[in-house]
Amino acid sequence: MLALLLARASVKVTVMEKHADFLRDFRGDTVHASTLRLLDELGLGPRFTQIPHRLIDTLHMEIQDQPVNLDLTHLPGGHQHIALVPQWDFLEMVATAAEAEPSFRLLRNAEVVGVIRGPDASGYGADRVVGVTYRDENSEIKEMRAELTVACDGRSSTVRWAVGLKPHSFGAPMDVW
Ligand SMILES: Cc1cc2nc3c(=O)[nH]c(=O)nc-3n(C[C@H](O)[C@H](O)[C@H](O)COP(=O)(O)OP(=O)(O)OC[C@H]3O[C@@H](n4cnc5c(N)ncnc54)[C@H](O)[C@@H]3O)c2cc1C
Image (cartoon, rainbow, N blue to C red):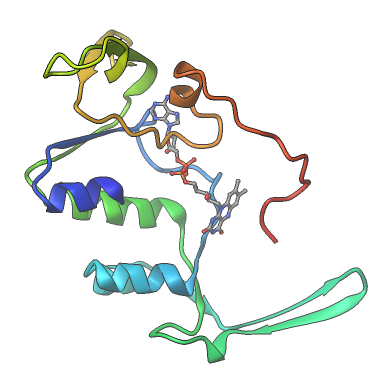
């Protein structure tokens, strides 16, 4: 999503995805009302409605023997529901929208394995992150330099590890309710 926004602002941007496609099942399928509003703001609402999906506007569950009923029909804004959509269709839609921008490039089968450090293009700083090393589709290790490197590689982020950041663990059994 960030890459789409940057590309629409004519910033040259490359997204690296280690897999060949988005056909995986680790992220869930619910797209919430606030996200649907964001898609509208980005002009992606009509494309989204073309993806086969289901809408949920009420939820009934039992938690610790107590019935819990959620009614989304009173939500403010343009969407009073959750949409259920296969995540790979959703991500393909965003990637396709970004690929319409000439300054956007998605490299599939490109696994980031580390960061490159050094002075930036104007010679400032000796230890800045100035790009990444990655394994390409032929298993060759290559370099890509960039003015800005954004880690968006999920909860066991390679880039976070490469720059020495350690997440705090709060021991919560669930991080979404
Ligand atoms: C089981 C489960 C169900 C969920 N259900 C929902 C839901 O229904 N609705 C909802 O809104 N949220 C849901 N979430 C939360 C949501 O999935 C996350 O908040 C969201 O996916 C985080 O996005 P991300 O881009 O940070 O990371 P991710 O979605 O994990 O994306 C990281 C991407 O980086 C790629 N990658 C990883 N390492 C590298 C590397 N070294 N080089 C190149 N690419 C790499 C991965 O292949 C992946 O495509 C769920 C989470 C889980 C675990």
